[in-house]
Image (cartoon, rainbow, N blue to C red; front, side, top):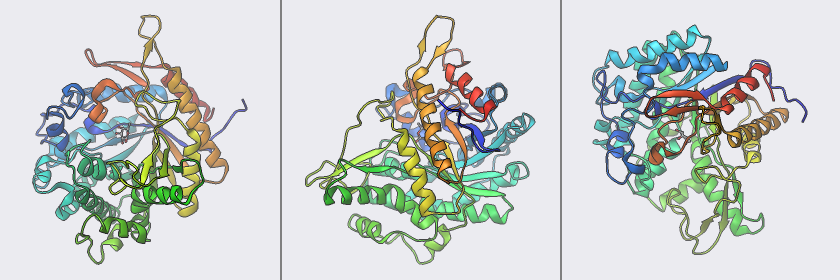
Length: 455
Ligand code: FCB
């Protein structure tokens, strides 16, 4: 195969999230988050796994940063746990929480690794959930305060800020179908949450910029939504509905176009939109310096009367059928289709010209195979997955998409939300009994890619 080179300065990195790796759940004043509550509720997470210890990154961050340096990472995307900064969500800042991220940022910079900070990766302080969580408008305002507190401490060293990670998941999985914390099952609440998450983004983004932040953005899990067999008008309508619920409901307001009419009409059939206030769309449309896209898998739908729909997409039952994924699949059962990434990047670039894009997550869960008992972890299927998606990203680049970087999910095996520790996404293996880290073959492969700036 011919060699593929990436543009000079292309950002190669890896991503993690606080609750998934930090552990130290009760240390240094950290408050409870909705994921603490959820994971301790019987039946919510695989075999009752919790993030109490996770990868113990809170104590082992120096070792982890050394590993990142060894792999040659240029950037590291991590999230800040809101309950470490303000244990009850709104009260005084606990400096010990900020101290941890301060040390982490210094360790990264000392190794020449650029910190990409995510201000919210799903661990809402439980105290705020008790007051309505993201269904309450005040949560958006508190989030802007959280963002400012973090910026005040780290803003002299951190250049790239993203507000939210995947608000689609927070809203629809957290409040709609209950698969994620806080586990509520109420479609109306899911739409309220969408709006308040977006509002929180807008308020935080403005506050960050006013405080001098260099680059501010958001990360979305946009979907490449495809019709079942490309044909019927019903299929096209299904694509449009699902695209509206997953992509346009976020992209519209974020980029200044407001909520699309068809999306508003759909949500108004489910919930009285009394939470939308005059001026909100303007607040949400804070200027974006970058858009982070997380891509794993495409979504295929068909328009069918009586279709089962999907509880993660409110109002799709009765008209939409989500097609079961067809192989090859990852260990989470997600369909592997790198071309979906190219299509998605091209579409976003075409619809929103001038917006720099980053792939802020991409990767796959695969069962590890220890071939020789020496601890060597062979993960050829992960290498194939990453190789395919990097080629797809390169295709988008060569068609003119302004793609600035790629952050693999994930640096470490970690707590995969409702799946607990049974799904391994890391390029570095974690032995949860000893906390020993072992770079998998994919990590060595990625190290090569980075050093050659290409494939
Ligand atoms: C994304 C999440 C991330 C991780 C990957 C597999 O939706 O942002 O935390 O769980 O999926």
